[in-house]
Length: 457
Image (tube, rainbow, N blue to C red; front, side):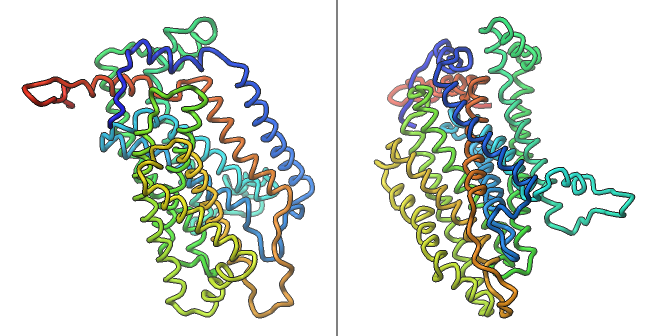
């Protein structure tokens, strides 16, 4: 990387612990606004529990729509943490250092938000206890392990647990620094969480080994989670869903949307916390080049999904793709999805000047996730809207209602509030990672060349 700022260790501590140790007024204003939106979403869920799902736009055939779209979308966003942290940590990519923790935290809160939507979708949240612990001896209800819907909780809870461990283990050295620089209840809070970390050689060795092992162990979970989410669709016989390409298609789509969300988060953190010395245009250039590779891999699997549907020449499958691409209103949404989900972002990121423009990368990453949300929407809703020959069994087209819009806004507010509160309690950029990067970038001049001053073990 070219932007190699020399930052002394005391300045790293001062800069990255400034927000956790001092609370500005804007924090309360932003947290209050986000909390209000989350509160409206909670009230909407209570209303749905009292009245029922009929306040949504569902018909007698359209029973998966906005709520399940949000579920798939947020599970996809959660793949950012593993992609940025685990893979780039194992490959020793230097540019990962300022963004690893933000990506990991985004993973945790995105997964937690995703988990709420299947519960909300039941309409009677308390009845999910019958499915989580479905051993009702009175009525003889037993679990069906063949159902793909049983696999989701297992995969997501495993991913959430491992991601939370990933965040906490990497956070321990920074908690020790915060402990030593705080007083009062904050000192006691950080002391408990730091678990006696004093920076001894043995503690650093254990912390490093734990990080590497978790990075390697979490990779199979990373692949399996969105593959299992795709099985919710691929295992069904519904036209448009019954496809063998769904597992890799969903995984690479999750990486495309998740890494784009990390770029959005990087730009916002840089602006909000004045992190210009830590998050530089070089980081956006690197993440832009990564996104170019991921986007074209996603396009390949999307094209496979289209070709498999068309080349099979099944009447129902062809009619469904005709519905997605050429029937109002899906045709307009498909065009918007194609423009925002691939054509505009990739066309702009081909230019290095654009990749190094932070404002441009912020808007490009937002566009990507608009397109990827629409991609999940088009994937889910049109197949259920496809009309079979017995038209007397069908009602009008599905139209989203106001509760669904509130729940979408509430999901974005919940993730944003979670990241904001975490940033208030803990440093959002890992102190020890930045300091390690400062040591590893030192060079010595030997003759006419400069060589690294530190050799990695």
